[in-house]
Length: 120
Length: 111
Image 1: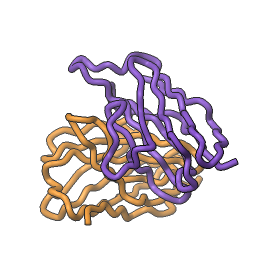
Image 2: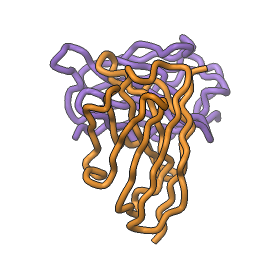
Image 3: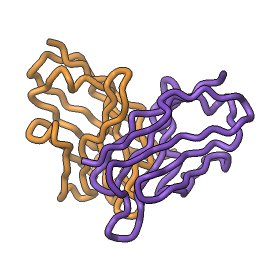
């Protein structure tokens, strides 16, 4: 079965750090662009970051640039999001997703999400 | 940034009847490569988003044919030909032409 499973979400203090993980199975992980997206409680979806299959290219939404870092370990079929200097507005469910790129430029496989809560 | 605007934000529907959701972008989604990268997602209560449509009108794997997408330029529509109970949820449009941005979502409920 093709699936993505996120972990690492937690309650963290304002200004703190957290590292999310996403374990992939059933797909040739290393060839795919992967992404992080988030959804604040009761709100819509927001793209956060993309990382190329070999990790050589990364892109971020402006609001997280300089604070969040996406990385991957293809040998472990895992994707990561290091989140530093966390703000209250970073509170959200974070989803790992496969990005169909460059052909269709959309997220064609999603994980179940992991909740990050930033407390002041 | 490209802003995506959906309407309506709330859509009560009757089982077996058609339903349509509109999505407008703040600028054309026609990419320099000739493609238009507009997709649709369904999010059922308590679940993660599910891809429905990509590149305006292409159904994702396993998506029932009662779902269809249309449009061009800045105006797009998701249509459900005959609403079923399992279609309840929030629907999002998303553009992938210039980075990736989503509409606010349209909540579909049964009358």
